[in-house]
Length: 269
Image (cartoon, rainbow, N blue to C red; front, top):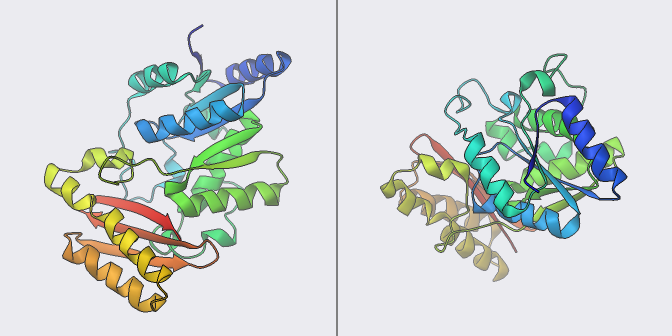
């Protein structure tokens, strides 16, 4: 049987209800489309956890600031649906704004403590936008488990915190970062990069690895972070938003710019 497609609230409710009646557990992978091998690894993990996997594709306006790349963000729903069918997903959910935000975009759900610092310092409304859309998607899909990539590590912590705060019985699964052969974290935004920028981008992972090894060797945390930020600039990144070690997550996280493209990555100790 081919992949099922839902676009409306009624359609997704009927599809999920039928799967439940058939005794199937529901896995969920929320995406913004422009799918790549990293997304497909999330689908694979969801299929290992659950019988029936729903993948949503929705470019969420509430997590983009006015100056960000909402209009430029790649949209290719037909190609994405084909990839998902080949990956074994059960259903693709393609809502429009009216389906997700029938009463407007305001949301009582706000991001918690995990949202403080890092991304929020540069994108103040980002995580409120994320919890807004994810809480609404959870309400529509009602999954048993949902899979998020560890590349967006702070986002993963924000989602875990939200699920706990709302008392939702959804298992949040963090999937390992999918990387290319050079170690570059796979991202839909990599498509924006020129070949020269791509060769610079591939050095981000190496800088993080050096920082992690220095921390493991007991070097001074502040010095290591300063050296890592300088190394990114020396390697060709035009601007560094942050390189920070979060002891509570035992992770080094970074965000840096190449042209108009902002790349993020992280690595655990």
